[in-house]
Image 1 (cartoon, rainbow, N blue to C red):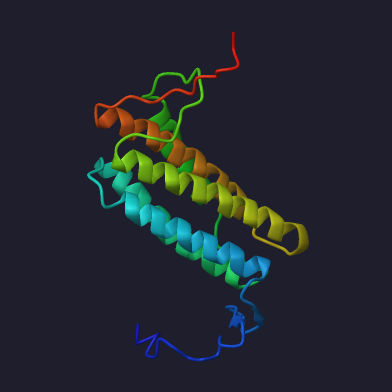
Image 2: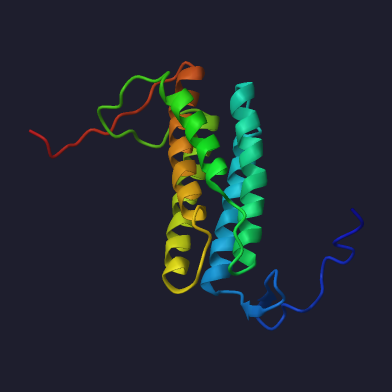
Length: 183
């Protein structure tokens, strides 16, 4: 592949618009661009998780997720395209089932805390939930791929289970929410 970005600034966005993958110009604060930006933020947060010492299978999974998130952003940038598919969702579900089977049942909500890897993963999880909410908003008015929303939903579940896994791998414990209103 040749140089795709030979010039970093183009000045074409100086007026508050940006180009989609199909060449159409849209406002930089459009719902579609908001989804793309939040997915990019999620990808950055997952990159932050990857700086930590992780199990090889988790590292490989998250690296694959980063590529899929880039694909997902591309899908959103080209209205009516569909890149994320059922197989992508099933790969997340497989990893989710594998990791979750190694954890004790959760009887209370847990607070987002723990060591650095766990806290970074909780941040990625919450950004993933926001990306999903932004996508739901977009899907109310425009077409999005049928598996894209499901992918983000499963990914947030997977990130939650990874948080629980990281807490145990580091010898830490999960901080359980204590409902002060219970008597």
